[in-house]
Amino acid sequence: MKILGRTFIILFAFVLLSGLMVAAVNASGVNQPNFNGERTEFRPQGGENGGLPFPNEGRRPEGGERGERGGGFWIFGAVKNIVVIGVLVLVIVWPRSAAKKKKRAVTTP
Amino acid sequence: MTEEVSKSALSQTRSKLWVDILIFAAFLITMEPRGSGLAIHEWLTLSMLAAMTVHLLLNWDWIITITSRFLGKLGGLNRINYILNWLLFVDGTLIMISGIMISEVALPFMGIQLPQGFGWRRLHDMSANLFLLMLGVHTALHWSWIVSTFNRYVIQPVARMLGVGAKKDASA
Image 1 (cartoon, chains in turn cyan, red):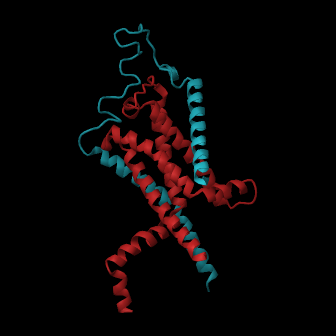
Image 2 (cartoon, rainbow over the protein chains, first blue to last red):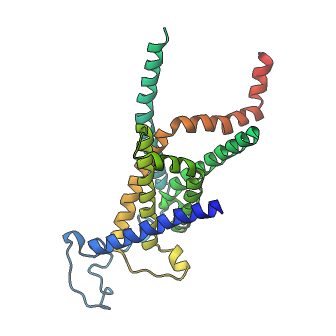
Image 3 (tube, chains in turn green, brown):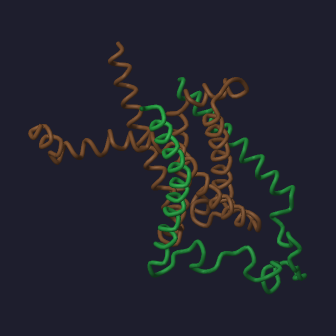
C-alpha cells in the first residue's frame, strides 16, 4: 500500500510536469512552423505539399538523424557519450580525492 | 532483528546497483537511435519511466529526509545533489514528453496520431544532451558509492568464483 501511494505520487508529479510542459510549449509558439523568424510561404491546405510551408520541415529525414543508418557510425556517438560522462566524472572526482589525500597527509604526522 | 534489518538493507543496495546499471545502459542505448533503431529507441524510453519510478522508490527515504531538511541545516553536497536530482527528473520528463510528441513507432502502434510538432524535436534533442551532462555530474557525485558497491556486489563475487580470494587465503 505504501509503495502504491509513493508510485502514485511519482506518476502524479510526472503527469503534472508533462501537462505544464505541453501548455508552455503551445503557449510560447515554439511549436509553430515559423518560430524564430523562419521563412514561411503560403501554400493552400491539401495542396502540393500538404499545407506545410516547406516539404520536409518538421519531418525527419529518411533513415536520418533518428532512423536506422547503415555502417558503424553510431558507435562513435555511443563512445562519445561514454567519454563525456567519463570526463565529467574525472573532472569532479579527481580534485576531490586529491584534496582528501592532502588533508589526510596533513593530519597524519 | 538487527541482522534481518541489515540483510534487507544489503539487498536494497544490491537492487539499487542493478537498477542503476540497467538505467545507465538503457540511457546509452536510447541516446543512439541510429544504432538501436527507432522502435527500440521509443519503447525502451517509455519503459524507462518504470525503471525511473523504481529508482525513486528505492531512494524514497533519502528524498523525504532531504526534502524535510532542505530549508534548514543541510550539507552543501546534499543540497547540490537534491537540486540536481530534481533537474534530472524535470529534464527526464521533458525528454519523454517530447519523445511522445514526435513518436513515429510507439504511439502509431497504439493507434494514436499526434499533429506534427515543430518545436518538440528540437526540445527532444536539447533535453537529451542536457541530460547526458547532468548524468555525468550525477555519476561523479555518487562515484565513491558506485565504486564501493560495484566492488562488493560484482568484483568480489566474481573474484571469489574464480578462486582469486581462495588463493590469497592459501598464500596468507
